[in-house]
Length: 275
Image 1 (spheres, rainbow, N blue to C red):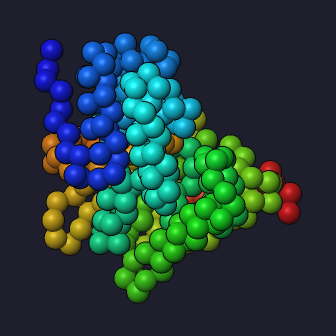
Image 2 (cartoon, one colour):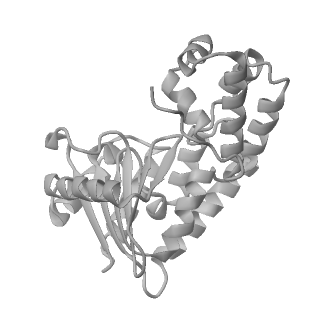
């Protein structure tokens, strides 16, 4: 059995939570699988919690605190984690975004944040963060809209985005919200620095079916990759791994519709939402 990955509790608040969780679990004599069975959650998620790659839901965290005899320590740490606007794994990626000269994105479930309208962003955040107050949601919406300045500056990065057809077909918010968002995509894709492709359902299986993918390139320094699911993300800096993701993106581009047919698909979906 490989040795567990070393944790640095000083790296971030989320890393501190993970290190604390592992210490409590080991003190209790439980394996990740045994602890997961007591919650119950998959043992792979316990591993993600310990590695600082995912914040457990509140009810899961409460059970962890009780089972491991943490005497409220995990509950206190979790409260601090929830107060941060963005988790650590997202903040590290967002610090690199403004420095990029090229962004290649594949989005599996939602329009990328840099292309979201205000109402679309608000609808997504309300659903994904149901425990947040209205004030907290509005703070997140404002932060997301502020990030879009990256694409409005004098020399914006090349922004190449492949949207899974599910992004267009799955309603978010009201029909008016979806119509505005899809119409906004058509406008944004006309910019000289932007390219939009649609990956149709008919393309079948593909190499990035586990979530969304972003590749960032810089004037100086190596490329990085960022993988993301609904409640976790990972910044990938190993050049061997980044090369694998770059190959996967090349294959996605080959499977996706060309830009003009892609825009035609978006226009047809817009018409499904009455003005």
